[in-house]
Length: 426
Image 1 (cartoon, one colour):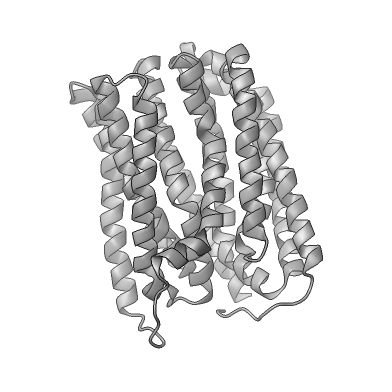
Image 2 (cartoon, rainbow, N blue to C red; image 1 turned 45 degrees about the vertical axis):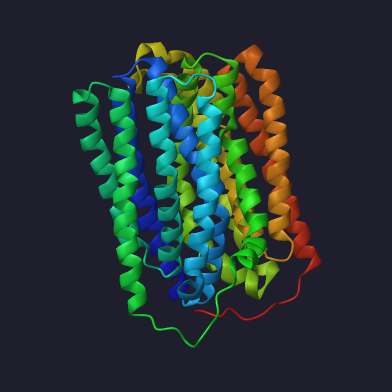
């Protein structure tokens, strides 16, 4: 009962801060939509895609390991934290450099260089913040970190408006505001982590794993995360290669709305992650039943939201966006079907990444297949259907990967039905 109350409390708090953060981010996005041209918004969204891909490449695999291991033994970070951050630095440097070269290659114009450079520089600060948030969540101290996030988004909204209105280059001002937000979060999170662990003495002497050993343990999850974020966001980069930059703005207007709804409900999985990890370490059938029930419930919620968007998408787009963005209404209707799919699929994704024997390998393989399918489909559909083709391919890829994750989780559970070790931390 105590664990259930803690999960409910964390879920409610995470959902609340997601709503607050999502609303603030979306307000800033709407301000930019009504201030910048569609070409400028396309470049801004290309930079956002670089930031999300870069952090997505560097963070999730490491973050899941930190969350899983530190949930079971809170002293784990004291020993392994410096090694984790050293590995993160190397991954971020490689990811940011490759992304910058990939997007600047086509047109090295000064404004493009500045805007995309700021976003690629922000990859480091967002990545470190995400790792620290996993530490906070594993220690059930997520409230402070999420409050800092809300303050950071308030700063972006206020400072961003000032910079956009008064700097000679509004687009650079918007990009700089997002960078400064993550720099501030990084500084505050670092001080908080040091303060928390100053009061937690280690149980005994321990030698951290060498960097090579840690990389070997982490690489299946890291590769799986790389494949996932690439298949989830490569459509934006392919739109830039295969279509006009303005099509990125139209596509992103629908993508941001779906993302706003998703982040609220998927925060439940973030709060449940420590419980899923402990259940898997004890009994796979119990863990499978647990994630199945949560996934089905949230999937039904997502289905209701998707049906509602089929009816109301035109009104929503007309209310939120300028008239020039109305072509994106159909993209919103198509992408709405990702809600029930991802609400269901995330349950089994969390199951796989917390199952060390086979699950992380299945997770990596499924996301690699998703990446290949998505790139192939987008290469065929975008030249003919533009951003609507990208939206349709997103739904199709999400559906296939979700089905694969459900079948993989079921197969692993059937193969290992025995009760495992007892959870280490209550």
